[in-house]
Each structure stands twice: as C-alpha cells, then as structure tokens.
Image (cartoon, helix red, strand yellow):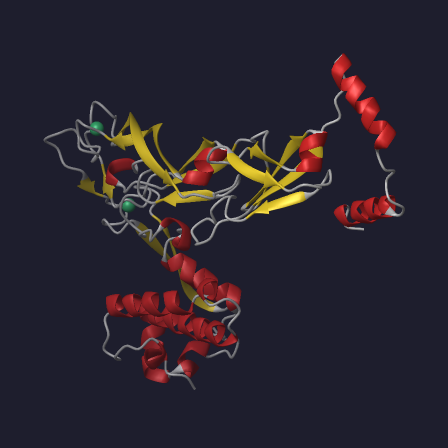
Length: 375
Ligand SMILES: [Zn+2]
Ligand SMILES: [Zn+2]
C-alpha cells in the first residue's frame, strides 16, 4: 500500500498549503507534457495526483489518517476511492491550477485578478529583412491599466470589499452526496467571478473594469532566418488584465513576402541568370542577384544552359542556430529574337562552320529532366 504523504514528500503533519506546494512542484516535474512518453513519469504523475486528491480534502485526509486506503473505500464496498487513470490525474492537476493554460500562458492563480487576453499580430517581413534579422517598432492597440484608479477598478479613495459569498477565497466548495459517497467540488465564485473582491464604488473613468484603451510602440526583434507561419511569444506585453490582473502575452506571427528574384527552400535560395551565347561558350563574369546585394559569379567557358552553380553560405541564416544556407544559381542561355543585320551575318557565318551537337547529348537532357522531376 502506498503512503500518500511519502508520495507527496511531506510530513504527516503538513499543512494544506505545504501539501499543495509540494504537489504542484512534483506534478510540474512529472507532467506528461514535460516527459514525452516516459511511462515512469506517467505512473508517478498519476500517483501524485491520486495522493493529492485525497490529502487536499480534509474529510478524505482524516479518513485516510485513521484507516489508510481502507478508510477511503467506505463501508459499502463500492468505494469512494480508486486508482486514478491519466485523464482523471490531468483533471486533478488542471483543477488545482484553475484550468489555466499552464505551459502556455504562465501560472494562473485560482483566485485573484486574471491576466489579460493574449494578443496576436501579423508581422510582414521582406526576404532581405529575414536574411539580416530586423528590429521593428510595431504600434499596437491594447488595454492598459486605468490611469484614474491605477487598475484597481475602485474609485480613488474607496477600496474594494471582500466578497461575501466566498469570503475572499475566489472559489466555492460544494459538498455533494452521490452513490459513491461524499465528494467536494470546487468552482470559481459566481458572485465575484473568482476575484475574491467586489467593487462597491466603481472608478468613474473605467467603470470598475480597471482598464483603458492604449497604444504602444513595441520593439520586436526578429531573429534572422524566420519563415512564414513561424511565431514569437512575448510574455507579459499583451492586454492588461481586468482589475489589476497581469498582462497577457503578445504572439507575433511572421508573414514573409515573396521576392520574385528567389525561390526559397528553408535556408536555401534559388535564382536564375541569363547568359548570352558567347558568354556561355567563352566564359564570363556575370552579376547575379544575392540577398544582401549583387554577387559576381564566374561562368567558366563551355557552360551548358541549365547548369546550376552552388554559392555556399549565400542563402539565409538558420533560425536560432549557426550556419547559413546556399544560393543555387541556374544559368539559362538567352536566345535573342530581334537580331541586327550584323548579328544575323555573324550567326549565319557561325552556322556554316559550327560543329553539330555531339551524338547522345539529348539522352542526357531527358535523364536530367527525370532527375529534376524526381522520377
Ligand atoms: Zn479606473
Ligand atoms: Zn466571491
């Protein structure tokens, strides 16, 4: 038989608060979200929640202290106690934290003012900004604490009164009898909405809400290398909570504009450059578009149309990591359409002396085509 006190690492004389603190600490440590797939952690998490669910309840605790697990089963053999499964364990855990999104929005308290709503904004970026990283001042409209009442919601000179219904606890406990025995449910206080206090004379400026509209320029530092759909979570810079609640978060969602010069694949960039026939035949230095400005690329003599040059480190930085992608430059030979008389004459001369395409070259083309299509 397990010892619930030992499981929760507390003394038998521990106060309710000690038990709660210890449970929260251990449950956070063994929470399945933090221990991807570990069976051991899962078992431990269930044991903790089971033990806590008993010891947090004065009646169950007293019964357990006197009779152990037997005391929890009740006389009838139906049993008010059973080993909890994972979903029950998670419910116990969530209930203890007041259903807050614990791992997303920070610890939320069961009573007291709630934090403000999270705010989401889209941030448009050019590819050049993505390449270098950028800090932008973004103007956002949000809710600030009220100037007049300092966010309390009460008219200056007055004080909020303790809620009569819950005695300032912010939650109400109901004892219910059921077929399985007595159990206690906890819910936010309906009178004060879980805040524990009531505003008797509301602030004239915010009407007791404790908030007012505001606008801020918030500097947002975007790390280099981000892509569309990635986001940043800035804690505590969102909307102020009602009546003194902490600020929520700001979620910045990135939206990277297309750059017609490049195709992007992660940190690699692809671009194309057109060559004249003499450049491809005899070689040349040509300018190609780079993300940080033009790059000179040496084209060796005898370069085929469609050939790809890989410029290492000329792509985009890896986001929050070291290293930079490559720039892939595909060359195409440009066939002129409007020839001058001189050009026509020289081309015709060339045609007379030009060697034919070597046997078997076109097979190579189809092979390359298949490769490019991934066939
Ligand atoms: Zn106010
Ligand atoms: Zn209340």
